[in-house]
Image (tube, rainbow, N blue to C red; front, side):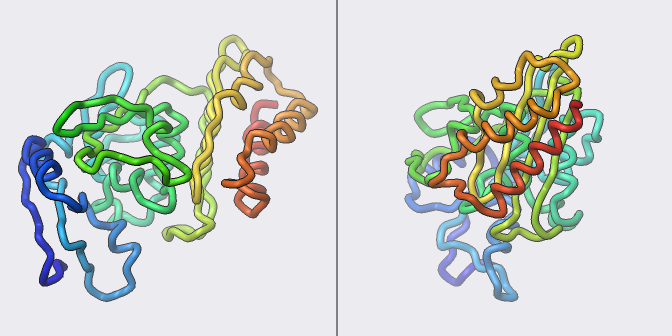
Length: 279
């Protein structure tokens, strides 16, 4: 519920959103408020002093599908995404969204809120990272398309313009021959050990034509140079190649962000397990 000194700015279109962001300093963007609720322990939801709710802006709640991609408004709920059906979504994204909490939470939680949560990368982040999702960023000055991995930072040192917001999430819908999504941590809740792993493979006449490997939890990881180690190899992959790749993976992990830990061990084990499906 609003605090006594909470100011809510009702908006009905993107132009009004941009006007508020331009003229009101320190406003907090919200949609389903599930992330706010997750971080609070009291019986009543306490809102920030200045609130800009996006859930009633029609332009930000739409889904548009073409032959090559799907555009999601940031306020599209996770349940609405599931209602599109598995055949209309990348498999890894469908499985990830389906694993989120329960129908009640999914009916409120939004895709934009899921990927923008501060301090921990939530369930949809890894699939979108692996799928090369791009974000449309709007501000009063301009509209830009930015790869998701460039917009977010592991270190928190990215200085964003306070007048900008994510207005669209574009997800390519290309076919993948192998698609693995795994979540670690307790089901239905987010803790410090919660993380998601995605492994995608595209084949061309039994040759690895493309591969994507993504991890998201307390920090996120995807490295194209690392993925390129495997591209061009023939199937079935040999056991010695799996050993080589998992050993090589260690060199690509920034130790200051991903030190030896339970999460790091899980990543290596999931990578080995996924590669074993190609033998």
